[in-house]
Length: 280
Ligand code: SIN
Figure 1 (spheres, rainbow, N blue to C red):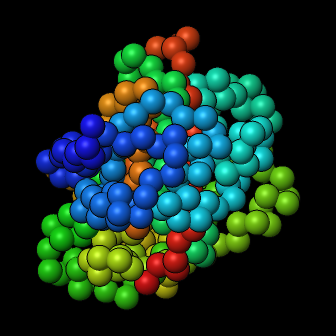
Figure 2: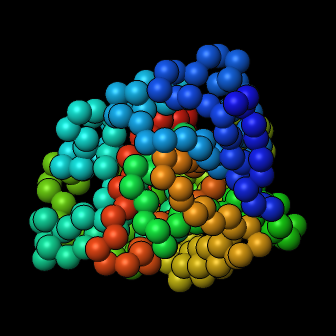
């Protein structure tokens, strides 16, 4: 079957079918896939679950994998892969179920140089629930009125791993882990390094405060922008099929996992993140 593309949602999302990723894709195919990703922001490559080594080898075509925090979640056969599982439990806390990424976020914004792309491979997917939702942050930016855009011009936001604005605070990190993630600041509107388009750059999980703005005003502004960016008109909701490889662009999207699948059904995602560039 030849490589075929189709649209997934009205606002974003492109599916690619007809690829055999048990061997790394040739350069021409990678160029087509990259173009589809830049256009669709989220690219779903349909296929069968891949063994870890084949998955990592194929995804290297999109960039260099970056080390991920949380050594206890790394795949025993491939350190580039983090396993996100319905069996995850808070081993350092009370043992309760953990769902990574259940609130809107963009990956790695607590780093000075965040990852560019995230890749998630649905090795086991529940029959119902467990969708991943996305928002198009170009569209959210473009829909702002002119006065708000002027107000945002030049603003920067402190991103903190354990932001005090976050609903679920992290209180079980070791001193070594804390030392790895000092505060950073990023522009509130960033320009995509490949498309040149402007996107809102928000992370409700990690944003602490607008630089130079009094706390209450900063909270009001960030809350209003988050409410705007997560409106349904900017969203795509991905329903997983087993074997899907979903690649998304963290420079112009936010996403969240849904923990609404029944207790006892299995969800196992293999996650790779790729090196990025400093937001400007
Ligand atoms: C993530 O936020 O990286 C995980 C998303 C998901 O599991 O659907």
